[in-house]
Length: 93
Length: 379
Image (tube, rainbow over the protein chains, first blue to last red):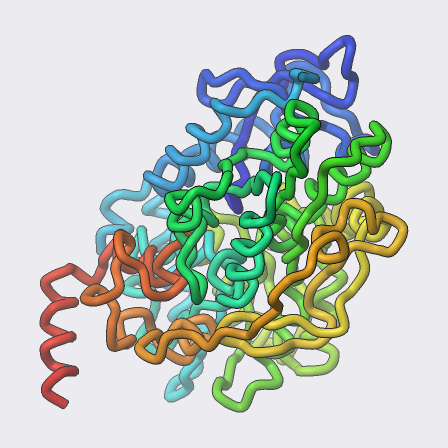
């Protein structure tokens, strides 16, 4: 929960513009981008995600470094990805 | 020196290590605290302490939000989960944290409805899907998770959702650092400041550390080189007679933080007069509560809580570990009675807890753990 995980923005959801679909190591899920309204991300940007919210934009090199760090962490990162897999914040019901 | 063998930037690391050694004043011992659990993780995993001169020690701070939650608050959360028609939702990290009456897992096994969620927005979805139940989100964490909770409350208010509330346990890192600086137990020469927390709060909130306490602080990234670089920057400040806030992680941390996140937190939450931190005791103005304006989303206002303070188990020395007074392996139950599978203290529960990191990445082998426990039992 405390881990920031990097994801690449694939698209901004047309019907929910505060949400974006991101790719985290092949897992594609919706996250909230409402904390980046000062500098909104566009498809192709990388963001650092905490508990379903993008907290900052990062460059690709930093995303890779962050991913290396997470993979090194092992179980905690696997738990985080497993939790993300269960997440469906874009479904209204 | 595993680190040098494994790390791809071994050359750069060697060069940095030499520069660090050259900056150390002969005969002086340096003690730096890394505040964030993520840094603790990198330090253990890569064996960075072996890599530094012996005159530098790194001590681990209170930057693991699961670790600092006092047992009484876990009991309060379980009492909430036991209310009729309540669904409790929580991050997975929280599930095994022991309170005085067991953990969320224990409570769930006894029949309460406690569900793991990835995001507070998932908790809000549970509320939408269960209009006949009241859904409570166990809100924990420092400034990396607090904005998400605040944004979720704002969303719930905007949608007019009436069956959702949060049990707010959000804490702030800056007052905890201040408490450590005020504590007579520890003499520190500087701080390696948290990385991701600083993406939210920026670097300004640390300015009191050099100004009022005369200690340098460098916010740092999570790679081994980042941490070595920040140690170098701290030593350079000391050598120059400077004392400032510096930002080693400027590629991610903006000096002023994330202003949208800060606004959302300030809109929904306000300072508590005081809050108990496991191991550190009561620290004034160190945690957040829901503002009156959002009272409808505040589980503490909606339900009556036991609010009983529960003392930590006597054998557990998490408090000393969280203050950096003890190394994890110096705790009497480390690796013997207390393991990640059967944790007694919180520092062993969370993967970012110093004890779990030490145990899992054991520069300290399990065999050595046993030797130490035998040695200490003889004393």
